[in-house]
Amino acid sequence: QKEVEQDPGPLSVPEGAIVSLNCTYSNSAFQYFMWYRQYSRKGPELLMYTYSSGNKEDGRFTAQVDKSSKYISLFIRDSQPSDSATYLCAMINYGGSQGNLIFGKGTKLSVKP
Amino acid sequence: KAGVTQTPRYLIKTRGQQVTLSCSPISGHRSVSWYQQTPGQGLQFLFEYFSETQRNKGNFPGRFSGRQFSNSRSEMNVSTLELGDSALYLCASSLRQGGTEAFFGQGTRLTVV
Figure 1: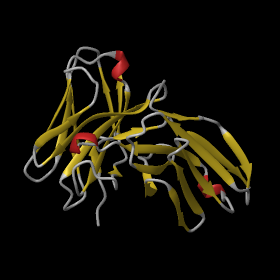
Figure 2 (figure 1 turned 90 degrees about the horizontal axis):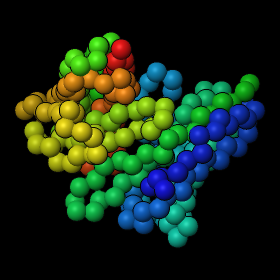
Figure 3 (figure 1 turned 180 degrees about the horizontal axis):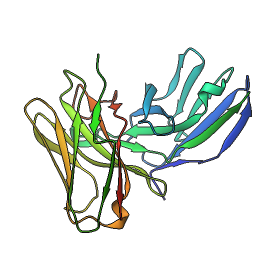
């Protein structure tokens, strides 16, 4: 079982829809949870990160972490064609004072006008 | 403020050759991490350098190595290239070691033929 699981999609939605992207993980030591957006032929771009359980909102984006279920989500409201990209979840385990990002494989999202 | 710069953007090499990739982090960032991205495995952590010292290493063979200079610029070297090394190599910079806010470059697309 991989440490981080993410449905690769593709996910296709009409413009204006609410999008829900999810990841599950197996390592309860993960402390920080990130969402990255990657456009084709570009590097990943950090959207937002949260520490431990709870919600965080930034404009049209909301990140949720449920550590009891080992489940994280990213919601995109009023989706736009410019949101079409691959969305990657990532997590860090700071055990031993060292940490590196563990990524899901990404979900490819297409928002149709 | 300039972002993370990776050179070259594209590279074609022959099996058995070696290659060196370069990464210039955001000014003031002292941590540089390297990742390999492939369609099958997604983003996988190679190693992290902080203050010219390797602080963390992923599960890759010794053919993959790196270094960091006093100005925080980093290079990654792959020796005895194999076809399976074809991938997008990404570097990320952050202020602190294992930083949660990691900023990625656009990557170097390596093709081994």
